Image 1 (cartoon, rainbow, N blue to C red):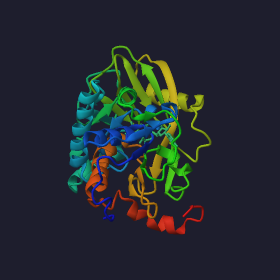
Image 2: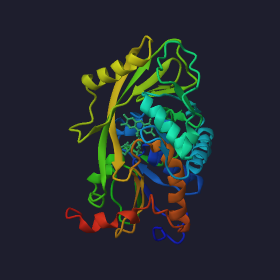
Image 3: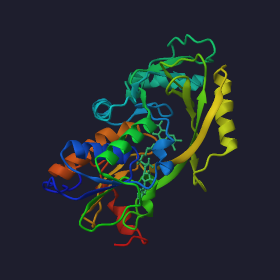
Image 4: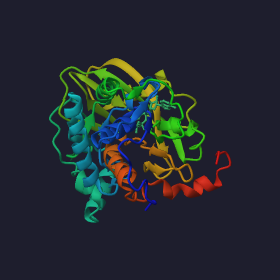
Length: 355
Ligand SMILES: Cc1cc2nc3c(=O)[nH]c(=O)nc-3n(C[C@H](O)[C@H](O)[C@H](O)COP(=O)(O)OP(=O)(O)OC[C@H]3O[C@@H](n4cnc5c(N)ncnc54)[C@H](O)[C@@H]3O)c2cc1C
């Protein structure tokens, strides 16, 4: 457990949030709901990885066939906060959608059997490969399984609505953050947090990803399909198709080669006509242990971080923001698996940190 935050945070405290991506938006919503008036700084959503993301959530890691800790709490918190945000913002962006997993080999089916026999969690969230696939245009040589607890958040819809609301409430500054030593500052700046002198030591790295938005006429809009790549229904006949994983990237720009790779894999599995609407790329802010980074700076007591959501921001942000709010407002300890206290050795050994 991380040591407590403020004993009790006064309602008129000056609070700055840096970044209005998914993390900053949900954090701002929770603070406003609790009676605070946070000032949100965002220099442009064009650079936000939240605008690139497909917005899918899925409790199962298909590669390892496992599920992280407390999936039921993460799922409950998603339903709770996203639906309340929809009501507050007057827009619809949250959509539960079962995921059809097309098993890609006999080994994967065998792995499922083993996990089931051992009573492991992945096999309780993903069904065996006997789920029917009604669309003959979907190839599935090794069978298909179903994850009931999946879905997607239409992040551009949510972020634009949140931006308009913050603007209307006088709580948005569309500029780079201006330091104020008196303000309690929450860094929700995605991968850019590492550019701030207090946070260069964080064990976070960019994992570049690319996603296509495509139009597919007359295709299933009631399921997400996953076969190494994913197809996520958005609005009308538009789908997100992705994605790629690229370590040590030089830039966050889309490139034709990766776009083609996604299309070729999609064409191997789906016999459908696709028209590309857009092609985007961004950085997933990933951490060494694949868990978010939430909490206070080890020495700068007015600085907090809320980030490191990797490829699972939609799933992690709701529950982690509830924990962060409890920490900030009530001084409740943070769970060690997400708290900054697990990282102090990185802080101590960093040479480039301004201490
Ligand atoms: C290709 C791809 C596909 C993905 N698919 C999914 C998916 O399906 N599901 C899922 O859950 N996640 C997915 N992700 C991951 C998801 O995008 C991230 O986990 C999440 O969006 C991170 O949100 P964030 O708010 O922390 O950061 P961002 O969305 O990057 O937001 C940070 C914001 O801070 C602003 N900012 C930074 N520094 C400053 C400053 N000094 N002053 C003012 N503003 C500042 C930036 O302009 C930006 O708007 C995907 C990512 C990629 C790249």
